[in-house]
Amino acid sequence: MIPASFDAAYLHNPAPIYPRSSRRRGDEGKVVLRVHVLGDGSADAVEVAESSGHSRLDDAAREAVRNWRFTPAHRGEVRVDSWLRVPIVFRLDD
Image: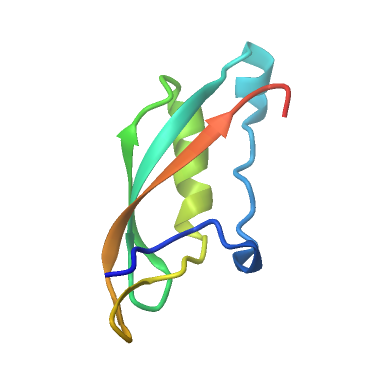
């Protein structure tokens, strides 16, 4: 099986919006999302697998990735649903 992916340049997935209040407070962190990718490349479910420790950052990551497009997993020539982990890093110097 070829796994799903999210990092192909042609997918044009926008980075999450850094919440203003989180910037003001100096919140940073890494969120790891668990995403159920359907055979058509859309996200069916997006769950926080590892929190950044800041709910605003977790929510911003989840909201952005919910709208991303993915390269679906393949079993042979058939597209199949699968789960994928997506890391999102919020860093103030970005």
